Image (cartoon, rainbow, N blue to C red; front, top):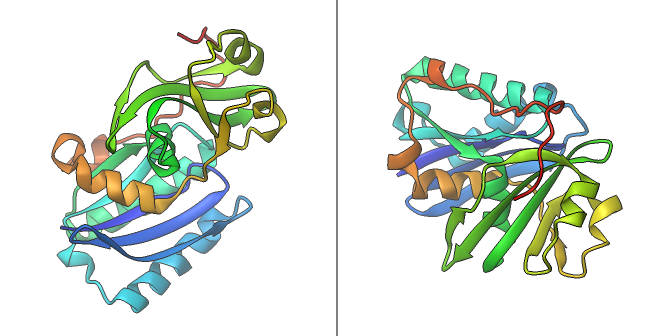
Amino acid sequence: MKILAIETSSNICGITYRKDGENIYTVESDSKRKHAEILPSYYYEIKNQSSFELSDLDGISISIGPGSLTGLRVGLSFAKGLAFSRDLPLIPVPTLMSIAHVSKQDGTIGVLLHSHGDKVYYQSFQNFDNTIVPKNIVDIYSWKEVSENDSGELKWVHWGCENFAHEFQNNIKAQPSSTSIAELGEIYFNDWVEKDPKMIVPDYISPFNFGSPK
């Protein structure tokens, strides 16, 4: 299987080419909100270095959110442009699940991604032997809500939450990565693939509707 994977859900911008179960080439950096400027150049760099043909891909895997509204729009628009040009399917990959995957943590994991102010996206997962199962629906919460509902049983994985996560003894920082988007896109290809790219929209999750962690 040949997959091109794109990650733009946060300040990280990256593309990975994956072939037959191996990540062949990755271009990734902290873009400082310049996704639209650097994504095309990353694509051509990775294409030149790995010599893949767009028409030979089985699909394009994309980090679908939640995350940066602008970043998600840029990444999905770019992925759709490539997909339409060669009639390729898209594989939308949940961003927090990809962060759980890249963390390599086993057991019950609480994943946090900073939204704005003291608001974070949160979802918990059960991860065993590289099989990740969501335990609840991803939503946005205030940090106070997350910390007050901490049972002490979770391994916390976060990105962009340095100002808050120090409250938890058991926490690690895990960077969103196109490598994880590529790997999950291959693992869950049959479950997530969408042959009509027009049907896919970013999973923004309104930053103005708050719930309580469960």
